[in-house]
Image (cartoon, rainbow, N blue to C red):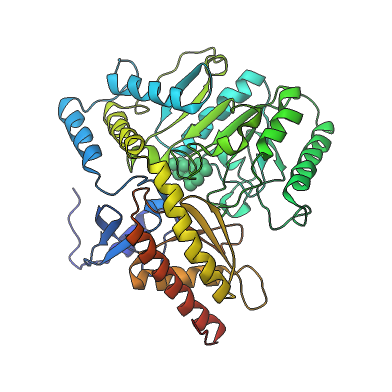
Length: 444
Ligand code: PMP
């Protein structure tokens, strides 16, 4: 190993020296996390935080969940090796479970190591099956950071290149508060989005491979269209033209939206998607993702392939333990109940603080939209609330097209006491930020 430097250099300086400038870090003074337990994490100064962002949704269930730790260490002790050239019981068992849970008939599963790679695989399958590189994606979408997934990311701040192997058309529907149809009621909004899609496709030559969409947009700020939107797309447009529907469930899967196990189920009136992608929460922090597809689509590739780390015995054993835990403990039901508690409290806060324009989302996926004194989306407000919340011992996320949305997504084992505590801390952080930025006293 290289010789250590004589002078101690702060970790942040060392980090910046060896990582890309475009790798974003939260906070003016970034946090080094050292350990976690349940819904809490600790930093290198020993400060404890209530984690309302679940490590950007990867810690789906709980930090240091003993069931996952045990499964991982037992498997690592038995065989720490990975290659799809050999059979592996945990991989097959996990694929069986996910195929059954997916709602897709005759489903097959291909494992990857991230959400980006899962969507990349879905695009490869859909474009090969349909023999077309034309793809529909939603405005304000985020699907990953590889060359192909950047090409279907509708939010330009996450899209560093306009070069793409795909031809992408962006569709209205996931943002309810801006755009030409924002003033319409849900039914009329859906009709307008369908008519707009039909009109756009009438001008497109050749087949279109797929529509890829997040049921609730994650990086986009926990925005979503009305329930039934994708069912209407499917029934009225996609099925008629043979266009496949890919549901990106990287943030919405495993019960997080509360009322459903998958986000697509709020749009399931015309049947399930043809492909579904997942990642993040499945491994409770382990790097695992994948794509589920109808067998006919999954098997359409002509050549052989292998994956070295996709579906490794260690990650699939850990993911299987995590999946078992969340099903056995009805964490979807907990997401629904805790989501309601948080929502009620945040709705009260929103009525008291004019900086909060809107509370939205589903289950334990709650977005808080912030504005400045002119009523414009405020990234400064979101960044300020993040800092104040951190000082109070609460970690939250941010996002949205203008960076003005706070994102709340705690681990799904959140207790009622923690939900109440987190809502109080967030109210206080919002109050402090508004006072600081608006220079007005709010009576709370
Ligand atoms: N799809 C969605 C909906 C996501 O939110 C993300 C990550 N934010 C990805 C794909 C990419 O996943 P990963 O970061 O694991 O590559």
